[in-house]
Length: 109
Image (tube, rainbow, N blue to C red; front, top):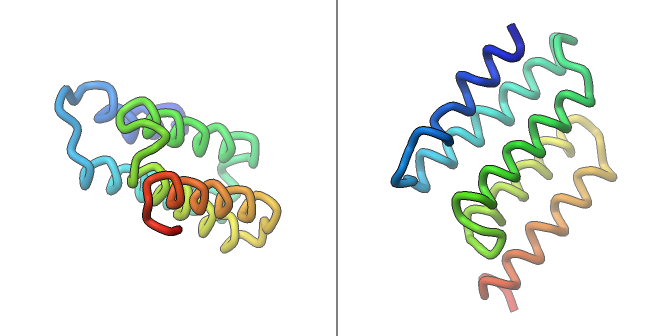
């Protein structure tokens, strides 16, 4: 069931030729929400959550690159997810990635 859910959620990343930023961001939000719900329901182990988050990051990098505004936004959202789960070390790592990307693209100086 878990694999089928992940396939359904990740499938649009693989079949779309032209990538719509808003659509990808919506998919990422869905993935992060799915991970949170599955953690709360104890249907997903932390290792699976990390794999799901890594897949989300890798797909975003593949479609938009590491130096994109969307990648920085996604790092921020993943940081918020970990913070909400009281996983502060992971949260801090993702917030720092988001800050680095914001600096790289000129969002902050």
